[in-house]
Image (cartoon, rainbow, N blue to C red; front, side, top):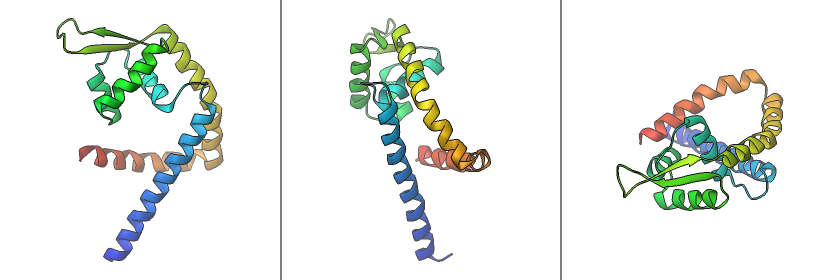
Length: 147
């Protein structure tokens, strides 16, 4: 494969990924409960699956965002009553974040709102194609995380 062909392939791949990302974010934003942003849902979903408290720094690293961006998201979630933020008893400089019962309910409402859209999309594409592309996307994500 020539350099020109390889570059064109890479540009086409990333163009498709970025466009798909923008389109799915637009669709998700339209169906999420009023006032909930994708970043809010993502943090609530992570905390619900983690089953344990996380520090803002751990969350920032998980979501590949700055600590400032995560602090902003957590402030909005705390204001809405979706998370509890407390001091770390072992290190007063740190805080710990846990999902609240209201946060669990908000996550469930968001899942109920987005599930039909996601399921329809996967159905339209087909289970086989989705299963085929997942390992490739996971490998791409892993390579990007390594950098």
